[in-house]
Length: 293
Image (tube, rainbow, N blue to C red):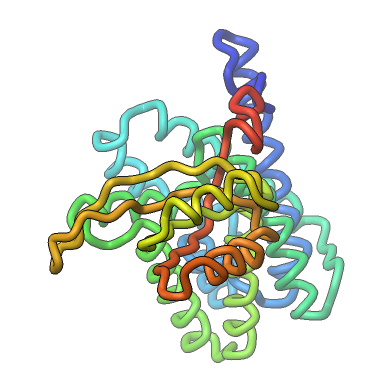
């Protein structure tokens, strides 16, 4: 996939749109064969389309396109043709596939929990593929981007979560499907995790910051001891005390966190330690930068 994404020209574009098509089809499989038969809504524009489908029998895919059209027209001048064209293709293809698969009348499971989990996994894989190539399936993504221009202090992911939650709540209240709404929340969580997995891979690294009066001893142990990790020393000044301190920064594998704690505790029990997840780490001792997709 990386080579397709990085190539220029006709074949590169053809490959990119083929992967968007594939991702859209995978998304539709998760939705139509697992989620829809169990009344599990997707939130966002698709969720609104499901409400209209349940109330008036309107096709979910067609309604998704109809609702998205004004959003695309409104967003065109803000985000440019590159993003909008790719997203319009992703939105149209996923909606068409949803209605095509609906004609089969197939439901691969009648268990709502399986529908939420398996449907969420498949849907997330499809969306991750679409997002990876710089497109979206429209709807909430576009609306969140527009809202963030006005409310820049709200995180993009938070905006999407708020919109999806509002649609799921409306689905539950309007159609009196409260249990289905609960399964929809589970599905939404699973979908988000799988999207992250597709976009960022399985990364098991952590970034550690250590503040200690014995930073030299801790540094030597991290480099030469069992951890064998590189260390960067950051110069810092306490805002309250005005004292200058060395802050140790190192990136380690998650299984090494316990060993790091043991090392720090053995040298300075009063040390201040921060451990945070790292989305991607490239370089010596980790994934090579040449392998980046």
